[in-house]
Length: 351
Image (cartoon, rainbow, N blue to C red; front, side, top):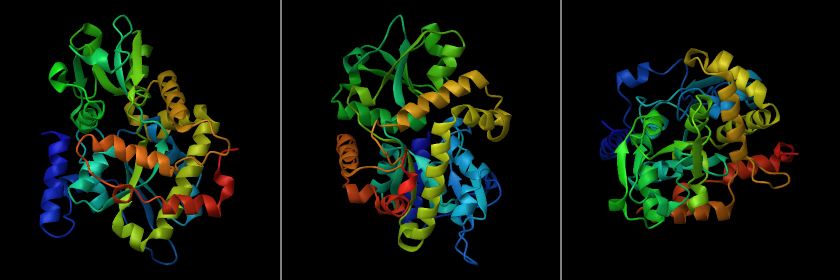
């Protein structure tokens, strides 16, 4: 069963019931200690966050926020970083039921909001979406027209983004053979597929460290200007827990500043602590972290990381509109809290 179908079923069921349905017991048992809590005793409780994938360096900013006490400084009692993965429940359903925040992607959140989910994007780690077309360097896919006649592997969790990308660029889907490939693009190296929709800070790096000559082209460079690794929360939190949202964002910003300042330490705490059960390769993990850092920076002086400009939000809405998601900026984004954080803490901007 695809993640897309699971998400649709959850949202349809919960909205039809007129409220937020709780995840099943199996899903809840996968959660480590903690969860979304209400304010009590002057504190914000646990900073519970559903991550979009396994605990690699993609979430190192949150590891630093936990390890260096930034969540505690912001008023939380601790952190609960709930890992994702190919068999995890949809992120949107977790944020609606058991975590305070989550990490997702614009088209996926947009699809949930269009179905009635009371969710908003409140920030983005990556100024450019990490999604890329991977191909073998001997047969590179450099641009949209190169996709015609090719077989492209795509994980079910990435299919909404892929379909939206093709629609936004007005590509003829009938001329591109999309096949389900879950998580591992190794078949591309044997010629089973011509390309793979991956993430530039993940699968291409792993294959290169295995000795393969891999070519990548970011979807953003093909004309699909999305931000990436977006933070989401519920409308109820925005209405009733605004200070808690701001505290969460402040801790995350501090964590990501540490990742930019010391990617080697970010690698070490990922390999040795937060992702230790994954047996990650240290050299490849460092390169993944460095690739991710390139997506965070936009070249501006005093950049406000995690923040999203009005122009960028509007460009994201325009991009997903081609895929049938007819939303406004206000439907999908609430950028008030992140702007208040930087107005109140100008020192958080990059030096």
